[in-house]
Image 1 (cartoon, rainbow, N blue to C red):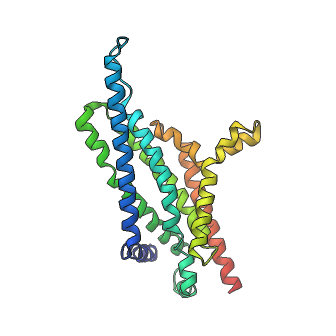
Image 2: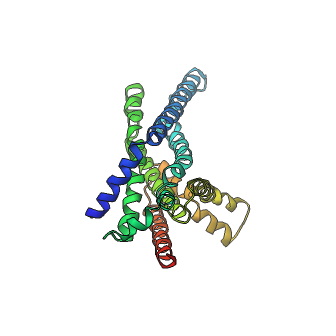
Length: 259
């Protein structure tokens, strides 16, 4: 555990002594704030229209679903673009700078190196999400009890687990090359693929279509955004992350043998 913590601190320091992390935070908060504002404006517009309608029966559109479900989906897309930027350097930079061999010769196990880097990237993303918790608190002053915190927290949990899966893929691909740009581009392509692969269910029927739907990271997120925490979806994200972290370990082992 001590070695994991040492690697974690090393990577966090690397993130925050450069402008990269700060730039990502600014862009993410600006975009998520924009989507939150758009959602609030849209809700206000349709609420006024509903009350002005002669057929208005006293019901308003569900606030949490109207505003936050869409916002969390938009945040997921933003982070899909940002995760490759965070992960592309984790191993590729070590190889490029020639510090990879030195790192692996320390009395530190490969799994401790991988987990330290994984948790550091996940902490950066987690802090981004924590900073957006102000949106539900702000919304409560506007709409009161219409804010369903349980549903929102379920959505955040799903988003956090999804980001863990994204980071695991990014780390795996970063371990396969010493070129950060290549790692970033390939990571983005891979993440986009596992994001949209479920769309194939609409075109391919039968077992293959169902398999594609189950592989899709997007499909497993939808229930979280509705306030439903399904242990099957949780297990999928956890196992998905563990699988790619395991594959990263196998890549490091193969590099040792070739070295």
